[in-house]
Image 1 (spheres, rainbow, N blue to C red):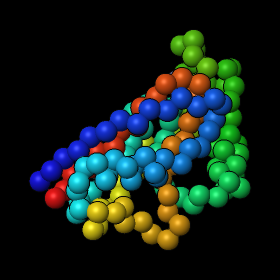
Image 2: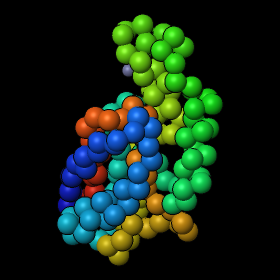
Image 3: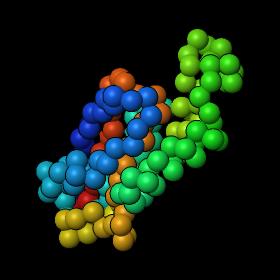
Amino acid sequence: MKSFTEYVWMNTNERYDIVNITSQVEAALKKSGIKEGLCLVNAMHITASVFINDNESGLHEDFLKWVEKLAPYGVDKYKHNLTGEDNGDAHLKRTIMGREVVVAVTKGSLDFGPWEQIFYGEFDGRRKKRILVKIIGE
Ligand code: ZN
């Protein structure tokens, strides 16, 4: 069994953002040479997510609006912010949107369902963060 590891770096201009990372993951898969196996993609930070959904900008706005409703930004709103941080909302948003995805690799391609793409969800941006891409198989 082969194994391949790559880190993708992110640094969004906005505090909240959704970025399509499908092409970076496909490039890592190509580099790995693996044709049959599994591809794990996870955010390496507890205020960012990786998730799979539709590449549609209205939906991305809906996601950001939805998580803001569930966990609104606010320094005085969260016990976590008593530590001196202001990102209590970002930890909750990350948990709502998920930490990682696993995609099957079939005949050298990511074996997506219809319209599926991989996204990075940023909830406390404007700094460097990493995404892990780990591919195992033959
Ligand atoms: Zn924090």
